Length: 175
View 1 (cartoon, rainbow, N blue to C red):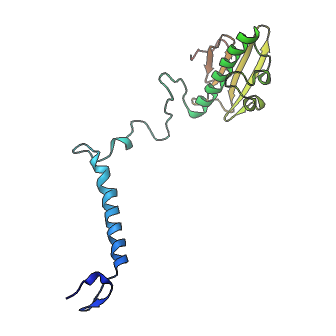
View 2 (cartoon, one colour; view 1 turned 90 degrees about the horizontal axis):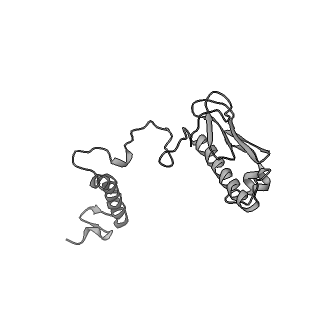
View 3 (tube, rainbow, N blue to C red; view 1 turned 30 degrees about the vertical axis):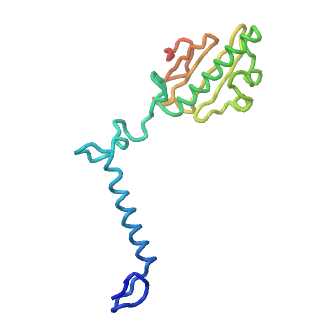
């Protein structure tokens, strides 16, 4: 009796070596997919810890401790405002006055020409107005709601927000 796995016919059994290799690879692959995730689980645990969540699907995840944003759109709008406010602070140190426009601010700090070109910032529209010894920066959402508040800041770099109307200096501070 010879070797059955030679690919030849012996005593009525035909076995293809390549087919057997593919079969064993598939079986091992399935076992690995099933067994490996179980190694990281504590006894009695049915779901890996990384897949459990205490928040609702799609809920906003804060970007840093104390993050005041309520949505991704707000996080982006506030991020834009912080970049402008930091650039204005740096600009004032260099020139002893604030920039009179966003385009004049371009190239200062991390504020780029591309950021200065358009006031459309996703779900928000940026507005910049120079005034004597200062400026006003606002971010107005296309629709104000609980996840799209309006924001307002001046040269003091304090950001104010409002979820019912356009934010102004009297709106609650978020910073």
